[in-house]
Length: 44
Image (cartoon, rainbow, N blue to C red):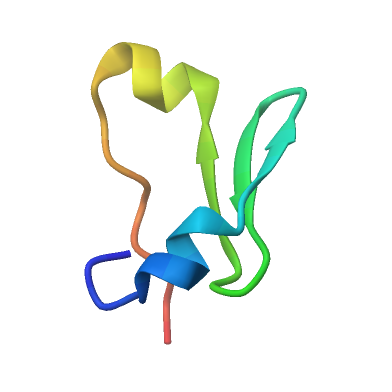
């Protein structure tokens, strides 16, 4: 997300369990937001 453009960050989709950024293939769950945890890093 840090390296994403403003346009990429603005393109998000609310989901039942969190938020999805399709341009970035990133997801953030409501559970992690409430707990104050960041998303687990994905293996590359």
